[in-house]
Length: 68
Image (cartoon, rainbow, N blue to C red; front, side, top):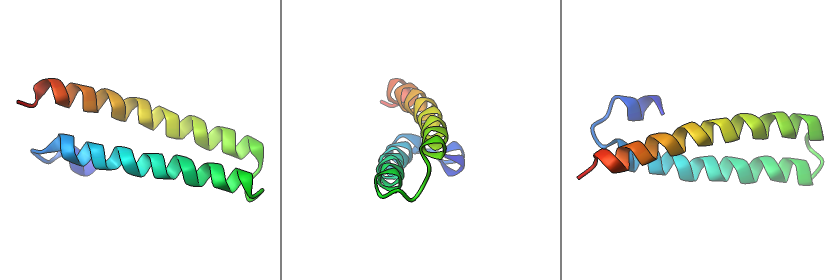
């Protein structure tokens, strides 16, 4: 997200980050499913990932309005 801040073509970079965030969500869920992390840790990580997702989604919407 820091690199996207300093580039001209933010939208494509942000969309790539969004797909990586989805992968991270899935991997985090797998950790829970395989009992590799405690439920409380999963909840905490999920909240942080979701917060990043909300910020990222807002930035993507903003860039779609700006992009020609």
